[in-house]
Length: 276
Image 1: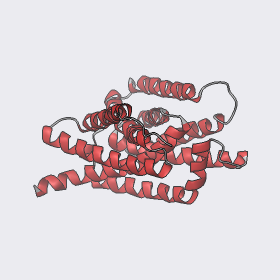
Image 2: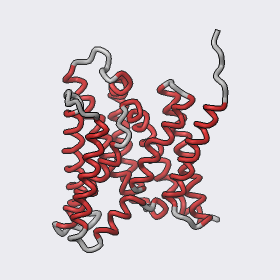
Image 3: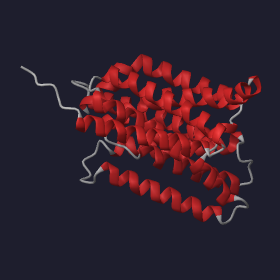
Image 4: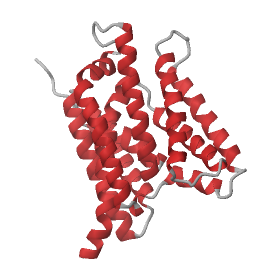
């Protein structure tokens, strides 16, 4: 029993960290209406990794990670600036184009790299069950630093997310707050994908927040419930995958996905209280 707890301690801790940070950003993402932005960022990060591998660097070397972050910052910074311009193009269309472009270019580069296709598969599916304490600690330090930034600027960034214009903020201030939000979000997604894979990260980002939104419109309540749902689903999925010997990422995704649909059906079936 003790050996099992020691083995499961790192992935459970990692899943809790991911549920907390992604649940926070998920509330912002749903309010901003940019649902698929994390998948696009993940693909751009994978493209940066492919370029690093093509240049001869090791898969998880500092050089490869630096290239991935550089590509991510360029794309996410550009998106943050372009979304403020009146381009007459839905931002989801821009996100979709970024995703397809990043994936297509990564696939082309993978053909030139030994084992490149295996890396793309690993990026999509992930394997949080085998995460090490070293990765957990590095994620915890980065997420803590980003959490401090959002504690300082959280109210102002939330105003921009909720209203889209941040009350009476100037245009320059809104752009600056957006840059802070998207850059920190980009760092979180790149680091999270290295641990859990694209599917798990996307699900933890959207599913708990969407489930919480069904019954809570208050920002703080939504955030708290998204944390509860995300942590519960992640830990349950890891335990289920371990004891049933099934893939951990898909197990968590299935649990959280089914939970969202279950809560949606409950929302439909339970009559609303009449107000007098």
